[in-house]
Image (cartoon, rainbow, N blue to C red; front, side, top):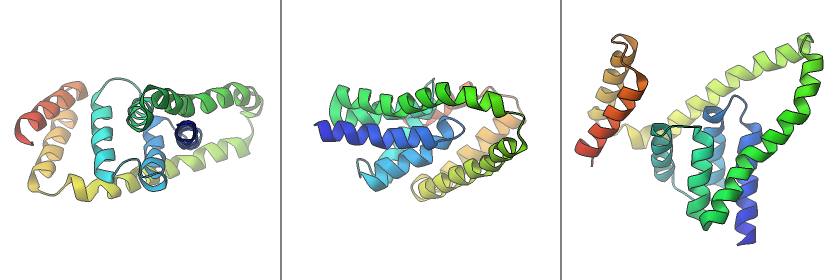
Length: 175
């Protein structure tokens, strides 16, 4: 049991500390740990957890850490995964903020920050490509994607209303 808790802490600690840009940029790293490295879930199970986590309010990375940790080792697993996701980053932020504050005018530091942003886009694109086969097997997901895009972009429908209506549609018609 202690080994599982340590592995949960390490897996989510790596994803949390390396996920530059917040929860969405951590998701591909969580997938790498959970699906590929430790095989705690399949890609389809991970996609379901990601979809549910996106539908619920709050930070996605901590919701996923809590759920996956609970699935692997119960309440102690959830706590270990949550602390792994948040703890190292929290400590590093406190320690490194003072250094960054001193160096914020340095052009090398500014260049480093600008250079990392495209990496986040590539990581999200890779996540989409991994989940594409299980998510878009028929015409219906494409129709949902187009309808939600039009609703938010051109009809100014609030994203929360789109999420709730899409969840309701899926519950009723995509079983």
